[in-house]
Length: 264
Image 1 (cartoon, rainbow, N blue to C red):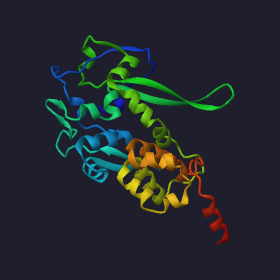
Image 2 (image 1 turned 60 degrees about the vertical axis):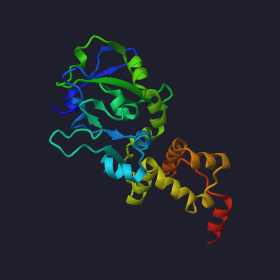
Image 3 (image 1 turned 180 degrees about the horizontal axis):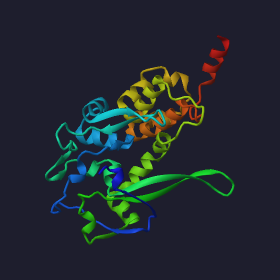
């Protein structure tokens, strides 16, 4: 049975109740940490690479695989499983997760899944409605435990609010479908999308060691933030991706640069 076969399609709310508990004494302990596709978000990568004391390049090379979403043409990174028969997560041991406090958002949600519905309000304005569902795998005994939760209390206990806040704008970009007739991202833009999403070291060099700040009008406060704070740099990366994809005028080219271009 695949992971998708284990999904219960019911749309749940934050108040929906369920019983679940995962602990070392349960006989399926860490079974859910093998042979699974874990999409990594930019904030996941920051937390994990810093936990391991690695540069962005080192972490991405050692622990991830990059692929292109066929529906969106957007690049994304997934956690690379071990090359063993069980395809275990590289961070799991018989004692449990070795990076537990910095584990990815997908791991924090389990056994809950999160989805998004595209809807329109009474005025026809589109908006995203989030919903939840259970992921029930045949090997999982967690649902036989007596500990009761609501979706809201589970989210709070697992610390997903911060991850959702950090990932929200990037996730909206990643899930955005190409419109009918819209061209896919070309390889150059895919490279920029990937860099601004995941490789904060390379993105910082791109901003501060190229002509980027000579071309774009970025206020001093923002420059200082993105120079010294990886999370601020990550959030700025979303602005850059929107500009590259021509979705929004999130960056402003300096007036003197525009005038110089007009003269050519």
